[in-house]
Length: 88
Image 1 (cartoon, one colour):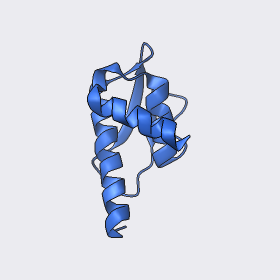
Image 2: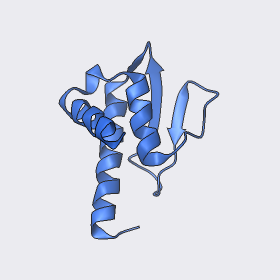
Image 3: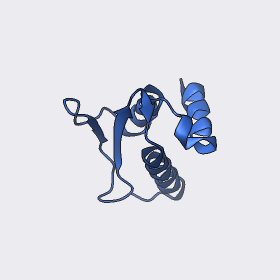
Image 4: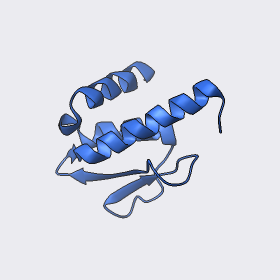
């Protein structure tokens, strides 16, 4: 599963406009756990920090919105940096 997630993240970096919503949601669940808001059009994921980058995604006719893909990539980068440096 981790290889599949890594492959999706690579594709997200190469083409943020070409990401399917279900792929972005799978990446978010992998990094941030289960979304908090399932009953609305927004899927909001909890991060270990307050503020930006926020993880809030929407389904746009089966596709992820490019700006939200970029926000998720920033959040993943922050998590990986904090894990590498031992920050909370």
